[in-house]
Image (cartoon, rainbow, N blue to C red):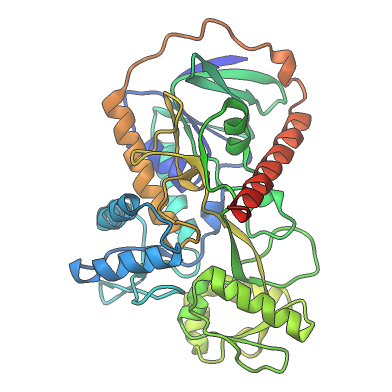
Length: 430
């Protein structure tokens, strides 16, 4: 089956949905997603979304982001993100997103690596609140179509121009989606790792396609480990214990229930300390104590964490819980410019799939949702400005090559992991 659309978007996370909403309503937009539309990593984000509160906070926010990223960030991208943050929050509020308030005023929390409280939140499910409201809006737009259980298995390239996608449709057949513009917003690569906070189907598909077509990549070995996920012997996705918990006063303890670290260190440094303590103690986890946080605050601010801990047999209002680091976020990805254009014409990348340099070598807490939305909007604006319809590709691919999508996906996953390892070794030898 072949279909045509004006703009094709791969992924139904915050970036893909916001981009779709910002595109002209006279253009047909098709969003494809591997699972149900509400099963993106954006829905899992607990902590919050950063915002520049006022001009006096700019230098501090900029420095916090640069310092967390070990000053490998693209300064221009960091400035764009921070300067755009207040407008993004206004737009989300207009779309019905509800942030925590006290008497009408926004409430701010603080997380690791931040020198001040500048993070807006909705309980401990900020990603679900934002992305859910975006999805509701997308489903109301007559010009936007969502195809669930549809997997990208390649892009259509002709003369170094992207003409759309090769996909596996929900019925298992392979087909083509031709498009004037294509936007890759299919998340990170946590599904390739044994221990990850990501959904298992988020497997770096866009990276594999980029490798195949020689699309420029950047920093693909920069993979962030979150220092606190709920320890479990069971296989599968790890449950995140939000950094906001530590921002509100939770502390990390060794096997003797003694505090051993500054809990508000940037994630990479804190992860190193946790691993060092686990090795020294001979334990597969460390303890997290929320004793300093009032019970009422835990239940109101972190209701999902509270419920999940109870399901695992822990009452976090009364006892410590075991936590362990796990793969969490991907700072590298497909190289993009300040407007999210890739090195291939008519192809854009946004969200965790892309690398615009905001995060450097380590993402500052709660910058991910903001960065995704800021650069998703910029991609939509650029497509609107540049829009030039493409002629249909002269030669379509032999679909026999794509007959077995499962085998192809396995090959892609292997190629991505091998590329990451090559980049890691190259950097070590520099």
